[in-house]
Length: 499
Ligand SMILES: Nc1ncnc2c1ncn2[C@@H]1O[C@H](COP(=O)(O)OP(=O)(O)OP(=O)(O)O)[C@@H](O)[C@H]1O
Ligand SMILES: [Mg+2]
Image (cartoon, rainbow, N blue to C red; front, side, top):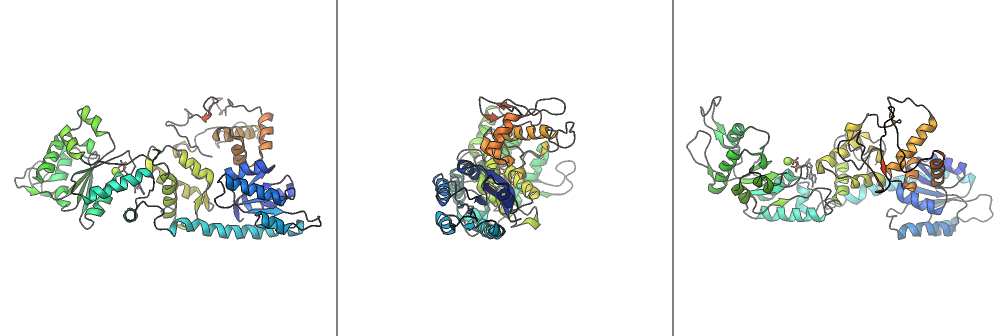
């Protein structure tokens, strides 16, 4: 099996069968318009036209795709001629843009060779684009050295700010952003730019009790409290001329905030129970995923410390922000290329299908880059072909194995094939927001067949998939055109669902 996806524009069973032999997924199109829609949706590796279509048809098909800017990879087209006719149109098909032409039944066997040729070429293209260009993933050269991926407007301004803060004497620094946006990575970037050869020490202020955190930060002298049976060097001292990273600074107990402020102002501190002043040379970088200003208003964070930290804050936008959203694709490609979760698949899975990438781009990523990395690693584990498909994109693994509809294994009571077909079609329509061309592509049937089935099973926009207990599962809102979240299977809105 050479190709992943093929579109066959033919009503002839024999040609459809021929196409099925060379690809894992076959999409059948009825006519030129159908072929255009399905090609845009399914992003196939090859399109095969039967002898009903002439060279001008092929030219028109390729021109329309080009005009819609939907054919960046120049999808190869193969024409299947009618062996019985006297005229050999091969040259004209090639001139029209086809990569090859099968002359008739006696020539059908060559499709396998053509498919292998295309497959070899596309794997070469897949691995080119990015790896050969060292700046493909990064806004600037130095960002590559700390593996900070992103070229969106938002990341460009973050990268600029990191560079300015690192080059200045700004101390302390503050990094703000939602969970998983890359605050610790930004802290390490400042450190790497400012004093890469000095120590980088980090502590999470939410992870320790007030007393433990104080003794971690400042150290203690022997006998200063019960259990202090030895002298301890604190992180402030261990950081030396390097960086002390105070993660989740908003969670620092208020009493300790006053002591930190004193260190920041006087640049000296004492160990718990100690009398000797120790000089603090470290750069102190703090981070917060809470809005510190509202913490100040709620009397949970000292106003004076907030002002001291907030000199030149570095803000990292969430992935769903319009100015950062374009990085989703870049990050996904980067994690696919660099993940070591399945060493045996390294370099074998080279890209994403168009539908898979669309589903990644649609998701809101409440867990930001961390969540995206986990989803990609999960997809790598699940994927068995060379391209990550929609079914590998599982956003909410907690829903795995839950009975979501009659199609899920485990509790099937209704073994009717027709019922299964009805449910599958309803689900495909719901998942594609009732875009029939896309639903047909997902199901691997023509639009005409889909229309017929929708009519046969009387499926309407308000149709439900019912589970074994007769409960309504996914719902569809005709007014918004959006698939609504299923309250029975998911706790947070999940725009992306398992295919
Ligand atoms: N721009 C980026 N390029 C590559 N990887 C990134 C990027 N941003 C974040 N990551 C990766 O995402 C994960 C989470 O990043 P990080 O720990 O820096 O986030 P955080 O904002 O500190 O999260 P939290 O608030 O939950 O502590 C890490 O594995 C990090 O390497
Ligand atoms: Mg962090």
